[in-house]
Image (cartoon, rainbow, N blue to C red; front, side):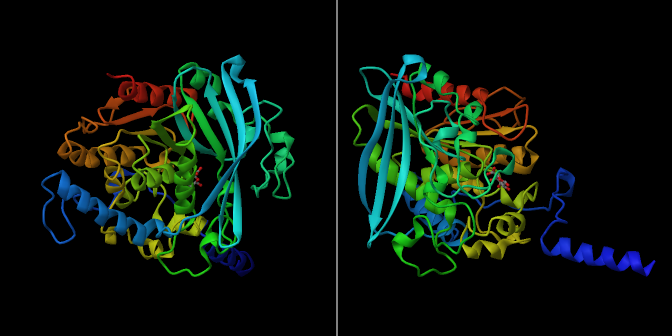
Length: 420
Ligand code: GTR
C-alpha cells in the first residue's frame, strides 16, 4: 500500500507546486461576498459630481491601475521610422489596398521593428480602421502568399511544424476565421494589424527582449508588464496612423481578443485618440470583475503569465477582496467614448457574467458624462446585443473571435460613425 501512496503523495505535491490542482469556481453560489468600489467616489471618500471632477478621479484611477495591476509605462519618447515594404492594389477580391510596413521604434541605441499589415478599402474618402494585434503573425490572418511570415519569437506549435520558436509557411492563412477581412472591407472599414510578439514576446524572460529594454533595465514592483508594453505600442502605432491621409484619425477603433482584449482596454483607457474600444472575451485582467472569483483568478493568471502584470499585482493572489478597484473602473476610464464588450457562452474561464456586470457598474460614469451606459442590468440572451454607449453581446460557442462578433462591432461603430 505504502508503495502506491507515497508516489501518489509525491505526484500530488508536484502538481500542486506547478498549480495543476487549481479548480476554477463556476458556481455563483460559491462566490465570496464582496463590495465593488464606486468609480464616482474618490479615494478620500468625496463624491464625483461633474465632468471636471471625473477627470481628476480618472487620473486617480489610472495611477491605481498602473501601480497595482498593469505597471507604470515609462514616459520617455521613442524615435519612430516607417518604411513601406510592399503594396498590392488588388487585396480582398480587388476591393482593398494592402500594405506591409516596418515601423522601427528606437531609443538609447536600441530598436525594435514592428511589422504592420494595413488593409484599407479602396475609396476616395478617409476610412475608419480597426487596430488590433494578431496572435500568430500577419501571414496567419490572410492566405495571400506575399505577406511576410512573422520573424520574431513565436510559441512552438509542433503539430504545425513549429519547433524552434520561428514561424513558417505552414501557418499561412491559419487564422482567417478570426480575421474576416473581405467582410470588414466590404463594410468600409480598414484593418491595421501586427503580431503582438513583435512588441514583446509572450514569455517570461525578465523583460530582456521586446520594447522593455528601450527604457533601460531598472525595474521595481510597479514597472510595466507585457500587457502595458503591448498597449503602449498601440499608441505608438497610432502616432504613425494619424499621419496616413487615407485613415480617418477620429475613427480609430482599438480592438483585442483575450489577452489582447485586456491590452486593448488598457490602451483605450490611457489614450483618448481611440474613438471606440472593443474587448472580445478579455476576462480576468480585462473586462471581468476580479472580485467575483469566477473562472480565472489573480493567482492563476499571475502564476501562468508572471510577465503580464506588474509584480505588485501578485499581492492580490487569493486576495482579490483587498483590491481597492475592480475592472468596471477600467471600463469607466474609457467614458464617454463608445466601448463594446463581448463574451461567449462557452468561455466560462473569462466569466461572461462578470464581463457584463462590469459594463453595468461602469455605466454611472457614462451617465454622469451625459451618455447612456449599457442600459440594462439584466444579462441579455445569446445573440441579443444590448447597450447605448457601452455595447455588449454574448454569443453561443467558445473562446474566439468570429465573423458574428466583427459584424456586431461594425454595427456598433456604424451607429456612432455614420450618425450626422
Ligand atoms: C488564457 C488566459 C486568459 C486569456 C487567454 C488568451 O490562457 O488564462 O487570461 O488571456 O489565455 O489570451 O487566449
